[in-house]
Length: 329
Image 1 (tube, rainbow, N blue to C red):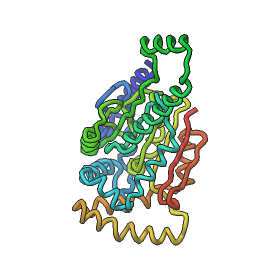
Image 2 (image 1 turned 120 degrees about the vertical axis):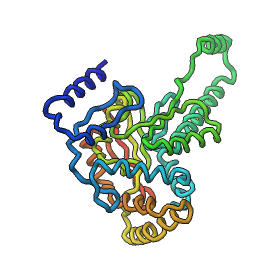
Image 3 (image 1 turned 180 degrees about the vertical axis):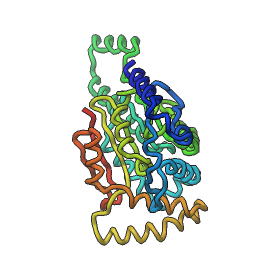
């Protein structure tokens, strides 16, 4: 109810006389949520004349989202193969570390934003399953010689359907092609339960307030136009006590490694993109976008400014990647 009242107020403000002079193009650029309209957010067109970066290129803010969409639409089919080639397979260890630090328990609800191919959500469901099996083994060991009363109580609880709440992962991505690839992977892996796929923008999430225990975004936040807005949305949809986790390329801390990394990134990754995916330009953008992302301390400050507490980060592979974590109180 509160979300609906808030949205109604935004809609009224968007239709007030001070906004009547916005351009038609600006009006059309507003996102129409594919799901709950009550959770949509109405933003003014104050950014229409501003510019931002698309890699090393300066573009109008209104163009960046469309160009990023085309990049990931182009690379979707070869995305996993290129990740293995570009990182020599190390991206799998980075994602495993994300789940290790997250340490989700049975019943956790995850929102994985910009997670179209499903890598984080698949790991999440497997991790939770392993945690649940571990808990069950402990219970079995504790009941090796149970009393008849204990056995009776267990049967009674089973009849009532007692048990841990089901964990769920919601994959939210603005790019339909990336989601399509993710769904195909889920089918091939035989993952049919505990997983949902939603088309949505990180800057205007189609969910009500206080819905998720964990919000994750892996190698995606650097591609949004307004990172501060995406952080505010993350805070909004998390439950009190919920955790924000961001895995992203960052600033290498070792000078020698930094030079080697730069040489490899600019000279090899676009070539790999051309050879494997037939797409030099998209991977040139991805390399450039990494260099435009804030360093570890700057992004930590942005998280704190957005309202997250106990913010910290972990440097992985010498700072090639950083894992940021913060909580909603």
